[in-house]
Length: 387
Image 1 (cartoon, helix red, strand yellow):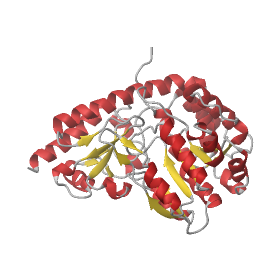
Image 2 (tube, helix red, strand yellow):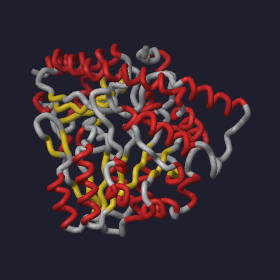
Image 3 (spheres, helix red, strand yellow):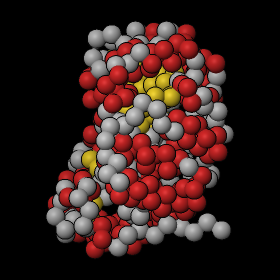
Image 4 (cartoon, helix red, strand yellow):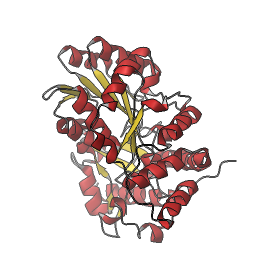
């Protein structure tokens, strides 16, 4: 029977030196950046301790079991057959995205992004020399979906690439197989590529399905690049390791031909930790994490109903990030600033995710139920005092 993970005590968490726990003073509850509050998977801890014990802190080697470890993980967890020979690694997901875009678009080419979306998407397009073409997700009233008509218009207008977030951050949307297949067909028919950030895939909840973009059709394999990492699910962002995955000869050659320095940016601890995270020994830990997050995403809905009944929130299908519309409370375009100042809760600022994020906040519920309850209660008190 799977046992839910328990978050570390607050007195331990406040000893951490990472961004989440060092950005704000101790009277602020940090619920912004995507770090979680749980102990590491035991297999990861053991592997890192072994490396430290023997001073294994050198360069990442050109051959290690990372590709095979991920391929086995993808088969077990996603039912996806990945060829290890078509996997290459780098420092983190956005590094991989930038390098693939640099290799596939020319300076000034337009790249489709789908806001509200992870803020570095905008920066990565510019870093790669492209120009952002915004095609927002469609709000169906019950969820979000890819605006295929809007993307078709952008491609007809000359866009050469599509930057996909699958599952989507911040909405937690697990895109459907049908929409991904249609997206692949549109890209191929217009000579464009699709770069799919799939870092949240291991965190897909039981009532949803993660569909790897490269798996949906032959067209997806011909136009697609997937970039992923163990870092989001296993809280390893500081160790620096991500995977670039392809499924056909054309994209594989593009990745193989990237400068050798792209692979050298990978951290050795990141690679060792990822191999341990992707191993079968870590499956129970990941299942426990998902059980805890499933409870928290539902708890967040209950807390909002109690303390912020006018807020808009849809229980996410993947991840530990809640996208909340608080426009009804009149806290302006960037309500996270007011919430930080007056409620002492740090949330991610909605406008950073695009114009669609005005009046919204993103909350990280990868924490204890008690911390989540305290945070929403504080914001609820602010709402009551603001009337």
